[in-house]
Length: 81
Image 1 (tube, one colour):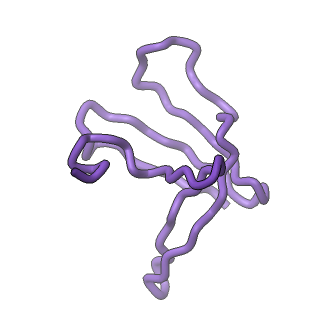
Image 2: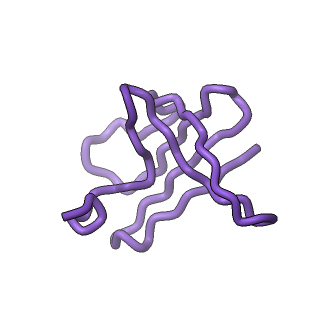
């Protein structure tokens, strides 16, 4: 079974101890890989929560905000540049 079929979050990929997110450019539909800092800039202090989590990219060009919903399809991702 794939990670998606198991219900695991596939938004962030970990490769050789580094974390990456893949984004698609709306202009030409190309996909690119961005390395993110695995330590969140902001995260809630509670163990169980639906609050947002923010990460910055390693090149400091983007801030990534993960919004979590009740269902797997409800999660969303906002990238600021």
